[in-house]
Length: 437
Image (cartoon, rainbow, N blue to C red; front, side, top):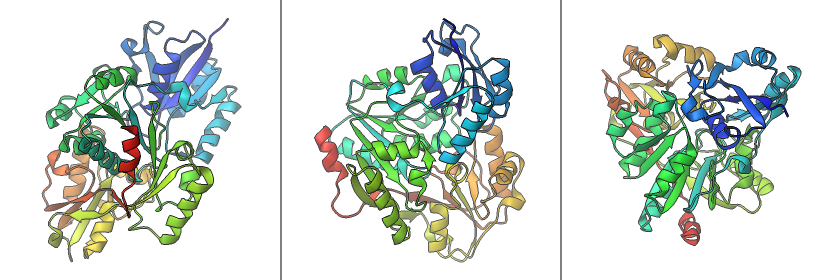
């Protein structure tokens, strides 16, 4: 019986996981290619033979998604598997329509098809959209588990943008580990805050290998999701973060709505800076789509070091990159802080942008008076640094989860913006986790 020819559409994360857990040693399928999008410069690589397995001695090529119609025809493709996240339902169906018109089947894989079972209890933190406050919720949960005397290992959703063979299973316990694996700004944003809290973080490409390593040193596995993707592991407690700054997105983006419907706990975050009507709207959406979920209301209080430097000044606000790009937000914690502290002017960075940073503004036209912290490689980090230093800002407001001064040289004074999760009223997450423990 002929094996089905398959292409997996991805963004260097969920696509590799689906392959590893379902397709790699499955004689019913032949994966002829991956396609890549969302992240700059991740196509043109090879999923290496050492990861692809004995059925793929030459590895699997990774192409730009734009080449999909040609690839379907060239390889007589039977199925195209959609395997990336934080895209609208309409976007997914446009891709489905393209694939169907090219003559192949279009497939979405359900959670249980690719989830892995752990020997340890698993708490998963996911979101309905990128930038909802997932990372601070993960840090909050990690602290609760630590206070309960548990050894926690955070396993972060993949971001393997470098040499895949060197990134199979990475363990981060120190800043030196970040340098060792040549982490991008996006990776550092997710790993550094956990390291600062003495929590070990794992990430990479093969999440079976990663899980088994983490289990050797952990009492509890804490899944730290990326974008709005579903967990890679079967979870004992599943927490989803819902963002009232984007009401309606909780039921209109893939696969965030899946998380909403699956979760045990729904955290409605940032209510201290959201419109009360929007808070109520997303609360009703949770009740309507997952009436069994425990709803927890939370603030995201912002603190700024040296806040006196901001008042009346020309400031350049730098925000988390993915939140602004495919997350679709037009502001973040840095903008909110600058406004609250009475900044004299928020500078439009577009006239000062260079290289790929300029290209980012050309692609994401909703961005104006803030700068996304793009840094997917050494060159882009240098271009980000140059863009910041080119601007006439008197102060740089760093609204990213890491201090950019660790990875670049800024010629201007800078202040850090920090934000954490704060439950409103009597804390409930600790009580629910105690049942697990």
